[in-house]
Image 1: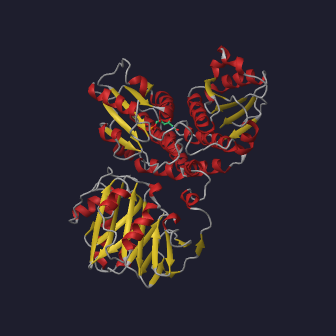
Image 2: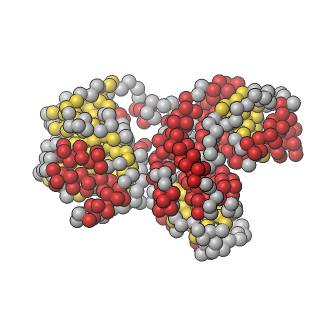
Image 3: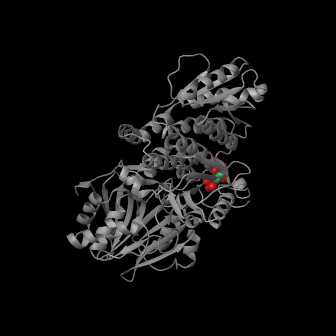
Length: 601
Ligand code: AGP
């Protein structure tokens, strides 16, 4: 996600106002920043890579201006550099954008055919040229914006300036958040409330398709039929930090609640429901006969999940290795091997070193990365970006889930090119993929996590159990709890318990068990009965309807295709960890000793 602001006022301190508002939105993204302001009857644009501080160094904040737009970026298309930074200008139109234009590629082709040239790799520049193209066609900004809403697909909050109307700030909202605020001597647009709190706590929420026209002495709201409308105003009560969390108590909870949109954004970016979209948007995998997945921490756990999916569904052998081991060990690979590096930050030292080792040995590499333009993204032969946006909480949730989603698409493509999935199964899977956001929303709503957490948060030992893919899920559940609650919990392969660790089970020891693989369910159930016989308190997360009494608590999850089952299975595991840590009063977003990106060995 990015942060956009716009300001028009009676006084001439627009530059200072915009920069001040942008700084309050830096938590939304900070890999580059820029501003466009009106001065001397001209739109001036200054933009820099890096944080807003870099922009301020090259900006004279005292220049007189009463109108402008600003942007702080979390790159989704195009590396974080000055060329890709916003604002973008095409013809007479200058814009800042938060969101993703899903059809930017076909629009770019149409615009090039109509004489447009592009300097950046961004979808935003395409949106800007689209508006300019329509403005030239209709010679009317409102009409151009109305038509733009019909043509641009995806999510976008836009702040817009037009060379022909240098007293006017335009704004458009479709899916991405955008607010409008009015203060006696100025009017604002912004991605989020923090941007305006230094000036006012009253703001208007826009609906999808709203177009707003702001001048220093007027403000007009229009719907997509260009009918004049009114919008209710809201008063924000709360502190700045709370607003950045959208009212959630922690960034981690906010980011879990973003998973429905993040999963939709990540999947829809590569898969429109057709096999052709996977063939086009995911690199050719035909030549690979074995796959190595290399990562650290939670990213490593996504590799373990992908291993089961790819091996069982696409029938291709997968080796998953912790990067700090892989980089030093003797590795057997050849020209038919693909090394996949999974990394949210794209800067994890051990994962980057493993990438460089594979490349030195002439092995093909693929990055699965969140941070656009990061080292791993730049150095891998190919990179597929998850669309998780900026993840603030150190313990990853939405990025982990988005990595699962992208790896599921990779497994699906491998299954298709190896003829391992029937048309009927593919169509059933496609329907379930469309329902994933709703399924996740329903799981998030459950009160069960808090009830269960209340019963076990004081325990010193908690065990996670599962077999095969459920073991991989248990490992991530266990890491999440360790990271944020400091409880020494461990994930075990369910069948391994009786080879020693069952000695640790005593009365009321919590066992969090995951059963989603029906082929292995009976075995895990007998393991759980062994723990129950020794007094364990079994909490079962399952997609099967259970009638037995081998568990004390049950959290039911949807029973869906194995390729996408992990994306819903992880939600209870993340929220159980969150509720336990909250009861323990831990610093959930910034756990002790941890860093969001481990850029050292
Ligand atoms: C995730 O909750 C952890 N903070 C950590 O294990 C993380 O997954 C690991 O450091 C890898 O980070 P990366 O995805 O940025 O490479």
